Image (tube, rainbow, N blue to C red; front, side, top):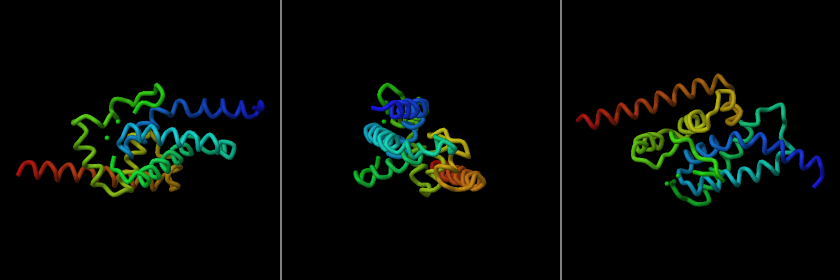
Length: 171
């Protein structure tokens, strides 16, 4: 291994390690299985490491990384034809508020399932991926203003689902 390759590996590791807890939570919010989330993060890390030489440092690393992870999650779901069930990635634990396995999150899981893919995806990036508007824009390849309007619409849509469910429960 040359010095440049070793330096590049350290730079990649330095950039990715702080993102792993968010990455695991974001992957889990998509695939909803601990094993699948671990597989997706590991596959994404391998792909990102291989492509790191082509990474443009003038672009935010987090957006670049989450776009790779998002594609790996989608590919995994297509391959497995399964609807997602929890994530520790080599010692990195998922934040407790993202541990979907408990019953207290079943209403949220069901509400997210009823959203359009676009609404679900933007909420996942914001709340499970911990992304800023700019980072979401980078991942999705859309302007930040569009992110704001889509996020607003997604929040309105999930609120409507909750209100509809409460109305049905009351009757």
